[in-house]
View: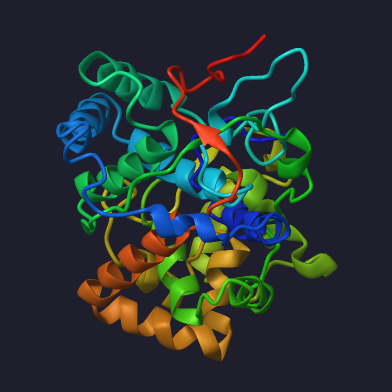
Amino acid sequence: MFPTSSTVSFFFFFFLISLAALHGGDGASHSKLRHGYYSTTCPAAEITVKKVIRKNMISEPRSAASVMRLQFHDCFVNGCDASLLLDDTPNMLGEKESFANGGSLRRYDIIDEAKANLERICPGVVSCADIIIMAARDAVFFSGGPDWAVKLGRKDGLTASLQDSNDIMPTPRANATYLLGLFQRFNLSAKDLVALSGSHSIGKGDCIGMVFRLYNQSGSGKPDPAMEIGYRKRMEKFCPPWGAISNVTVDLDPTPKVFDNKYYKELIKGKGFFNSDQSLYTLPETRKYVERFSRGEKEFFEAFAKGMIKMGDLQSGRSGEIRRNCRVVNHHH
């Protein structure tokens, strides 16, 4: 069974990188992206998206983590082309029900709402792929995190692939050594890895990502020795041995609605939720950045923004369109 919550589960994102490499993830088409892309064709594009994100966060604060995750899950499967948003058709199984996404990703309706508002003021102009990029930035900013200028000008993909998403089914067992190798394939550094892992500053995690660390780390039949004892006992209450099917969610850090650097402070204490989190502090190459970001929130914010921009540059190089409805291609049969 897979989780049914709004888990941030950032470890998913790391595994999406490998597929992007197979599908021209850093193709040349990102050279078309630029700041102010809609300044003449739809000047209100960014403020329109901002208003939708703000409204939804007021009614449901955890929607911020949900929206932020969409960028990771879209961009690393065949580039940032909103393929993630396509619904299944009789001829195509899309990405929404993949192992990584099916029970976990949520709040697609927020992107739909932003798209509908944009279609009213400038129909056929703003891509769903760009809306995802804007929405992720706004969700971080409205949670107290950094703001950054987004490059826009993406096209929406004409197809999606359940198989492409399933081929990289994620695991909570990923460690920092493995993740570093994946990042290096994209010329992303240890600093980028540690900064982007800080997306776990907001949101919740599912017990499915924790139980093996509590009871059977690396097949040892014992808990992860890197886990602080008090934290482990508290997690055992939330996540019993069969917690993987309990659909219980736990805050990823002490301030799950506020984007801040407490995530790194917790790693230093041995209170990281996922293996992919805690192992960042056990590996010397990444530990130094955990320590730096724990001391300097400003440096973390700057590094996170840079990482998000780099991720937004991942493009498939495939042909695309501006979808009128993010869930279907324009000329579907």
